[in-house]
Image (cartoon, rainbow, N blue to C red; front, side, top):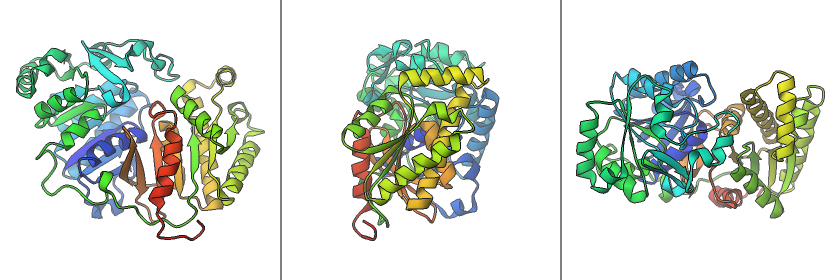
Length: 443
């Protein structure tokens, strides 16, 4: 069985759909629910534990990743994957070290390239849609600004273990030659970063890495690994996972609640797109969220508006302020109050999640799209979702999911930087279709 540790919930879904497309049933659990008794009866092909640790201090991230890895090993997993951000944001060194320490293992292959989303690595330099990482939008990430592009340097700064790399030229020589090169590098390093040009590169790396116990990086390699005969346990696969999934019956209205908390330009463009399409919206004004005397009333009004729209049978968007000038002013006022960027991010996510809970309690909403990793985690926690099954892919790395709790929901959890401009529009249509026609009550 495959065990995956992911540092945020959207990344868990991202890697989950890559394995699911290979016919594996994938279950995702937040770390706090990973020992839930209800999980004991589940027999997925792979377990994914979300540590929700990207914004933590390195010491806390290490503790969570170590615990998650131990739980996966105790559950019977024998192959391990440490899923990180596809541009190395977060506590990558601490979390990679935690996995190796928990397994008493000395080596991990690191593959960050994700060509289907524009991430490539050449000569050890990471690119985002053709731009060096340090010149991409991630340079301005409010919590983890990426100011360099050399992956060895980024990882080496976060670990005492030795980091090395293999050039694309070795990958181009084929799987057998790459396997030999990896074996040679194991003698002198603990983490080995491998270049990725395109999907063919990933196929070659998968052939060479099929017997590796620990793999780290983006989800892209998982798609190719899952397609290899014998990589997963014999008999893996289910009609409840991947693109062959059967639409589950779902009661209630078919309209969809969208929630956007990410400040990445991709999410801002996606929110603007569905508003242009006529989806009604309620903005959570980030300046009002900093005002304790006005915050609660502001959230109540937003929740009331969204619930009324849903009850009228329409889709609705609830989003955090994404106007650049307002965002800058919010950060300025937050600094005056002694609130840093990480705390602001969590403040906004908490406000959105509380609003979503109020909307769902009033409207019975069970189809939800969430944009932003921090927001997705907060919404799932607020709604009491203790685990979910990966369902179908909408775009690369962006699946729908089905909650495993008795109050079933279909939802999409989207990384802020992923997806085409019309992704939210596609996700709305997808959830309406996946809800099916088997229960027309309230439709």
